[in-house]
Image (cartoon, rainbow over all chains, first blue to last red; front, side):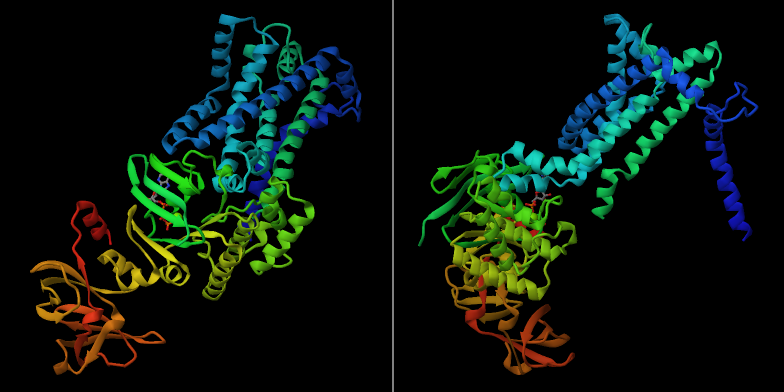
Length: 260
Length: 357
Ligand SMILES: Nc1ncnc2c1ncn2[C@@H]1O[C@H](COP(=O)(O)OP(=O)(O)OP(=O)(O)O)[C@@H](O)[C@H]1O
Ligand SMILES: [Mg+2]
């Protein structure tokens, strides 16, 4: 009995610590008063302000373009990489996986600075360099999602298709691809989340004049905090939440459960 | 005899420096039921994959119907495979699985539907069209894999332990069905198994393999009655394999006792392996036997008793319909016709094979 209620209290505390700050943020985004302490009644004006602000809308557009484009390209490259890695011998696979995983564990700020140093050597920083940077750090996440699916997909089904007269291309699209698709999809969603989420790498590789939402919030915060930033952050949080739910309960997850 | 349909010539195959098949020569005749038989890891699947085109040999040629197909892609070979691990397409229904090859060949819808019905009936799974692969048991999946292959009416069907997951009854039914199919459709079968009984009941020709070497090729009767070495004798059914010395023609010394036999041409005083099947050992009264000993174990096997007799320092395995209680004294006799004499292996490769066995 005591143990059970202790467990409950512990769990509640943990969730409180995790979600209280976000809850405060969300509440404040609907607060009519500019104060961070007093509740001045419910309002949507900060959301309205946010939508009508050209800086925010421009950054929003940039963010969408970059996260979509980088996730798409990274998904393509990452899937091809996973196919290649899967065909390697065991030992080379381990080496390749190590090599692709290191950028994921590396501190973002180090990745950001090193990319910036590399980019300025060849070109001006801008939209293009941010895109390249995002593609680069997204690829490992795609590989990580696709490779296990690929390992599950027995090579024998592909061979069986050849055996029944399919050309290699037909066999891939009819047999291998459908089994791979859930992994590719979740890889794409995760890449998009990571891209939306990123601040450090974007900050160092973006150059002047370009902002994604996260760098824009940071720049604005330095001038003083506006409640429309709360509104924006709330929306970003919701977007991440939706992506997460999609990843866990979306079509790919459903398939997996069905096959068990 | 019908003509050679597939001819494997001097095939060598190695993985990562390990030689799996070494100078393998084998041909398969049209309409033949040929079985590759051997212990796990001896290269049966590898041989089948070479024929199917999923691996290419390091050396040697594969001739199919007079044409060299060594470098032909699997989808261009006129044969179909039932894979050891079924390899059914998990995202398709059973009907879609079976129709896969026919759709590629652009057969009409009606033709395909008829074929699906026919094939499912054949493997005793009528009405399973709409079911998903996940919902099938291992044995059912295996039968669907067979159905998927045969609807294409290939010239040659390669089967890699296709009945491995079935229980005894279903297994026997399917063995019968497969033979019927073979006769009905006139397909050549290349069949892989490590079950010697299955090989003996189904095959026209058995190829016994060990460690990538062909040990013996012959009809089931040949292989069973005249195994060419100790490995084959041991692998095909249980045997007593005893060191002996061929004193002269028709006389062999086993366990210091001289036995009359019928083999000739081994020279004088040659060390040989002597094979005697358990059912060929006759148990008689102690004084009537060439050897005498004591029963050390007795197991009832249904049709017969399996008895171990310690005689002359060797544990003789005996199958008999007469009961001899443990501890009783018996004599051993063997009809000269039932003593099989074999040369000892000579080359180091053969020795390795022998040691492994
Ligand atoms: N792709 C591969 N890479 C490395 N070694 C392999 C490969 N395929 C097979 N081998 C090796 O070749 C040998 C023969 O394998 P094969 O699959 O032909 O055996 P098998 O006779 O079919 O055995 P089983 O009865 O267990 O199926 C084994 O030692 C196996 O480990
Ligand atoms: Mg095998």
